[in-house]
Image 1 (cartoon, rainbow, N blue to C red):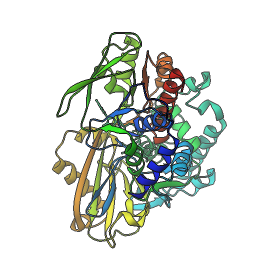
Image 2: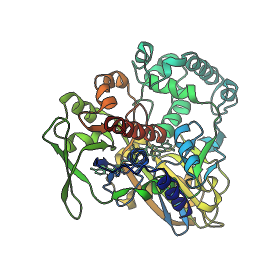
Image 3: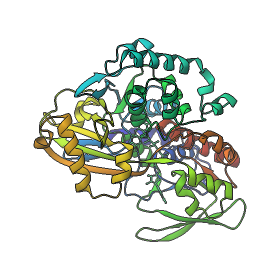
Length: 460
Ligand SMILES: Cc1cc2nc3c(=O)[nH]c(=O)nc-3n(C[C@H](O)[C@H](O)[C@H](O)COP(=O)(O)OP(=O)(O)OC[C@H]3O[C@@H](n4cnc5c(N)ncnc54)[C@H](O)[C@@H]3O)c2cc1C
């Protein structure tokens, strides 16, 4: 791939020639682990990345099947992801293209465009009654007025006060009930892979505050382009799950025990843990008790992604369609992939990516592929008449830790362990999407920060 060759030339030019004496391991080859690896490699270190799957990128990965490019998890990169976009620009990685970013809500058999840049956009949103329209404008203006209290990365006393109840309870108490189903549910479903019941009022207000029109980008060759390119100059051990990390001293060294086809162990001076938090306690038995409990409690929604290739092009729909749970029990968000770039889908054919709603992802997580396909296709036939007659193939991806949820009290809970995340424990560092919601940018930043701590400690 040309982008890999170009990237390697650039990165090799930057490497320092200093002897590489520090052994650094990264557990997890998702975007957080790879950004840590990238930063460490830039400073002249040679990290080793352990990845349990046969591919890199984790939830930011793609697959090419019979000429179709399928995003297995993350599907867009908004304009606001400045750090990720800067790296992509600087290193000339792949081609990031602007998508139309059109979004709609499918209600009562009709598609309603959902574009929010100002309160007036809510007034034009047809599926709401007049009372709901007025209420949602009030809510939107309230969110704007809260300003820095909604900065989840730097919570204040006011921020904690706003996370006192689930979003649904708050809405039902103060606003027209229609807002829960027709505004809050689709937002949580698309952006949190969750529901207004399992996320706080704070999460709702913070989301509404950022709901202004923005541009959305995607990689022409699939979202996996970035991880694949970053991984091309690092030592990656795929199909090598880390089972346990042992240490005898407070600051290491660390023995990393791996499973897979050839179980073994290696010694490292520093370790970056770049996996979802619930996976950490069993891997690192010597964690302090409060951190261990916190990691176990970090709430994730599972997610099932179903890609469906069709023989004929589908009639024109928005790039992102949100389906209401009052009408659809299985589907949550449906992405029309040909909008992302024309090269992703062979001429004249179609590709949809259906992300199941939280309830269906949870209920069907251990179901067979056949059972999941049958439920998805049955509902897509309601959405697109005769959809199933057009089907070429179906691919299913499951993410047990799909997206972080932000229930009431979660930010406050996190404060008791904040210092571990910021400073690490000994020479064990944390990356991954710990704060406060799942996003590629948050994961990317966390990897860079973990790497910077290692670099500053060893004085490079
Ligand atoms: C369906 C879906 C859609 C999404 N859409 C978007 C979007 O459009 N935009 C956006 O910004 N975000 C989106 N997200 C969220 C985003 O994908 C994640 O926040 C981000 O990719 C997380 O990256 P990460 O590196 O922190 O974790 P992961 O991607 O989960 O990486 C962790 C890696 O660790 C590996 N691993 C796990 N256990 C072990 C072990 N024991 N040993 C070795 N390796 C191990 C895993 O295989 C994985 O590769 C979406 C998520 C999902 C599920």
